[in-house]
Image (cartoon, rainbow, N blue to C red):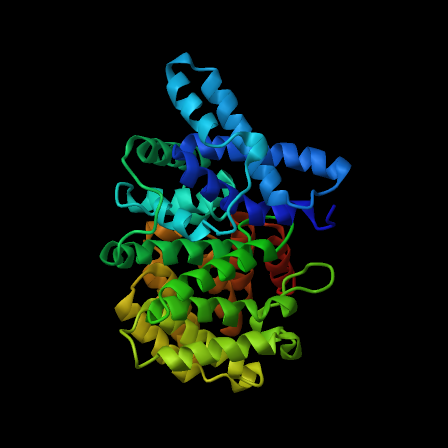
Length: 404
């Protein structure tokens, strides 16, 4: 028996097991149901008896048995059941050594699905996020997201989709969605949308692992390298983002000696190799911004004019409210908080910002820098009410309390 954290192990193994079953049997929705049952059985049995020496083989075997049991319960599927059992009896199965996670990523990003469904299904099947977490990532109600995931599974079920890596032209087209999904998985891990913990290292580690897999497949793609660099440069600050009691520490106050120097070095090297040698994209630009932050010896020595210039380019390449929000902070650091607040005002009518606390939080920060304590306090308290993250709630409430 091995001795590892069961929850972390199951999260790592879930997409691998699902990929194996889909490759062997097809029927994405049935396979995912079987894997979920196997994961539940493992959580109960392994906690009492210990983790088996080959946990992946255990999960594949149990999940496959669940599939066979389901097929036996439906007489109309008898021929398919007999065919499957003849090919590989559950007790005799030995999972292949290959990791099917990357192929599963591309399956979830199949063109038969809408882009929102691609993102949602991949976050559920590969990233291991709950439906509530995915709903928070997309800023939609949980019930809406549950329906979206269910429809995506049905579309996969009724489509003639082969479980294999797509041909090169189609692979390049679907890469954009794959990268977006990994970006969302990483973001949910780096700043959890809800719950008692600010960050979830299991999700950030999985996103980085999958980004490395994609880079191995497409080593010359600038945006793949850019996304991996962005993850590494951002995750490098993880140890300094919270105090021992879990309280949030803002970037300006983080002890930089606690940043991961090896990850920063790797991320900067990726950015350096990529910029100017491949078509520029949003992930490369965000990675370049992160590199400027990470290479600054202190907060006061941060090259804010360079960061502002990069955000201006990013807003032309990939415009959006979050980019504008971040550009407002950079603008405030270069030209003063009132300039940043003026730019924030352009986001007040943007419905995409209505479900997030970030606009109010940034406004509170810039109002505080401008010396408007009363309005800053009100903005901080408004932001605290809007976030479901307990560390962010505590941090924002503390900022407000300091201004009373």
